[in-house]
Structure formats: structure tokens, C-alpha cells
Picture 1: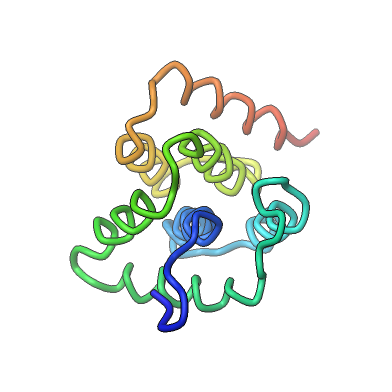
Picture 2: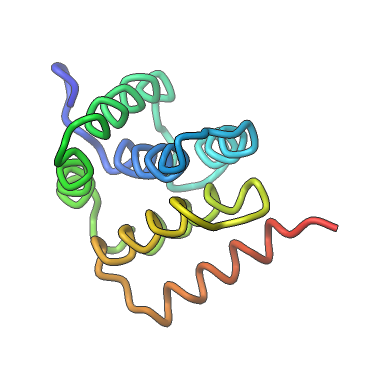
Length: 139
């Protein structure tokens, strides 16, 4: 991905959040805020160089324009991400998808793909999804 450094686990998490947000071809402000807040405040991003985010974004967008780009992206993510962070990756993905108050259409299909690619247990994934919905409900 980067000439000077390989994709890190943190890059992989960022890439996945960006891909989920872009899946419906409409990256909303609420999704950008959710990604930024996650990067700035969650322990998994401790020490992350946020200067890498624009390059990670470009990589995601470049891959999504290619015919088999999503498969390639998932391959890069699986290679960079330790299995113990798969549920974290899915939770971050669900939070980004739910940030605008709803998960449907392309975002729902993308989350299904993420679930399958990371081979998450269906029951665990459902609990993560439920938590994301609960955190992002509006009055």
C-alpha cells in the first residue's frame, strides 16, 4: 500500500471503516465524525499516525474502482489484521454504518460481506450489530 511502510493493523481497521462508509456511495458527515472519533479515542488506535488516513482512503477508493478490488481489499485487511481484532473490526464497521441512524441497502450488504470475510460467528455478529443500533438510536 505505502512505498515506505506496509499496511498496519490500524490501517486495516481504518480501511474497513472507509469501505463500509463508501459502500452506499454516500459518505455522510456522521460517518466521518464516527471514524475520526474512533481513531482519536479508542485504545486500539493508540499511537496511530492519523497522517496515514488520507493514503489509506486513497488505497480503498482506488481498489473499490477495480473489478475485483473489494476482494483485494479484504485480502489486505486479513493479512494485516490479527484474528483477535476481527470482532473489533466488525464493531467499528457497524458503528460507522449505524452512525446516520440506519443500516440498510448497500451498507447492510457490505456488513454481511465483512462478516463472511472475517468468518465471524453469526451470534457474535448479531450481538455486535445490536449494540451498534442501540448506541446510534435517535429520539
